[in-house]
Structure formats: structure tokens, C-alpha cells
Image (tube, rainbow, N blue to C red):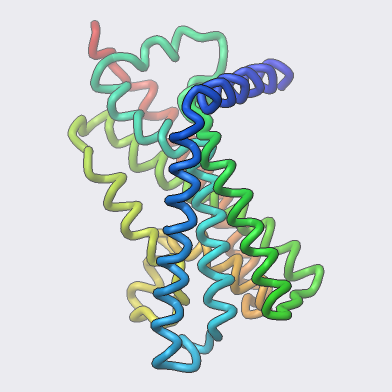
Length: 262
């Protein structure tokens, strides 16, 4: 454990050094994040000009859902998104061989090589918006609901990671999967809307084979008191199951990996 902590701290130092070299680029990304949040907020405002609620969700609760979805997605982006997106290239070019020779867990190295510090800066901004939202709209969740929401947001990021790992592990068999991450990212955007607005078939998919609901909807449902104990237990069980399956699938693929350079 100490070895992996040392490796990760080294990666964090490298991330700080990289961002220090490109400060203007970092400020530009932060400005674009404010614009992104503004556009999402404008969308919600337009929707609620025409309806008092969205499938039982008020305007304030929809804002909450949007922010929790963004935070879970940002956690995944900060730690692993670009690393997993680079996996097909590592397999195709044979660059994965370099990871296999290191005296550390290959999946850990592949998943954590690049720590996106600018995503961490954006995360602080988004958490600030969340705190402002709760304070501004006098929305006071109980301690239990708030704690469950925090845990489920972290779980949502883990589900995001696990499903992305499964998708990118397919590159061990199919080398041309360039668009699969873009497709998943587009579909996962559905997670910032109340699940009930979609047809039943889509809702079932979002809770099973396309686990979009875990990224934002379930944490928001827990924070607003909408999630029953069965849904929270299901979320914990599903998170553990998909993570176990993703790691097992990775190990299975790695055992059958043949270097492109051999």
C-alpha cells in the first residue's frame, strides 16, 4: 500500500508541475467551465419556464441533480478518464508492454498515469456551486441523506470508471473502437435529468446495462429523500458487482494479450 501511495503522490507532483507550465491554458479551461455551467443552468431555466416541475422534480432539485452528476463525472475525469481513453492506443501500439514490466499492478498504472489537475480545480468550483445552491434555495437535507449522497456520488464515479474500463478493455479484441468512448459520454449526459422522464425500457437500461442513473440520479434521489432503502442497497451492490466484473474482465483480457511489437 505504501508503494502505491508513493507512486500516486509522484503522479500528483507531476500533474502540478505540468499545470504550472501552462497556467493560461488552465485559466482558459476554468473559464470554459463557468460557461458550461451557465449553459446547463440556462437549459434548466428554459425548461421550468414552461412547467412547474419535471416528473415531480422542482427547479431547485433539478439543479441539485445536475451538479451531483457533474461532480461524479468530474471525479472520474480527474483520476482516470483520459487514462482509460488512451488504453486502445496502448494496446494497438504495443506500448502496454512497458506497463507490464513495471513492479506494480498494471491496472493501477494504466488507470492513474495522468492526473488531470485542471479537473480538480473545476471540481472545487462545482462543489462551491453545490454549497451555494443548498444555501441559496434553503434546501436542507438531513445528515443521513447528505452523507448517503456523498457516498453515492463517489460510487457513481466508480461505476463510471468500471463501465469505461469494460468498454476500453474490448480493445484487446477489437482494435478500432475509436468512437465507443464518445458514444458512452453522450449517453451518460442523460444522467443529469430525472430518470422518470424517460420511457420504462430506457429507465431499466439506465439501472442495468447502461448504468447512467448511478452517476447522478441516485445520489440526487438519496439527497432529496426520494431513494428508498432498497434503491440505496441496490446501488451499493451494483457498484461492487460492476467493479468486480470490470477488474475480472481486464485480467481475462490481459492473460490473452499478445504484444503488437512481438
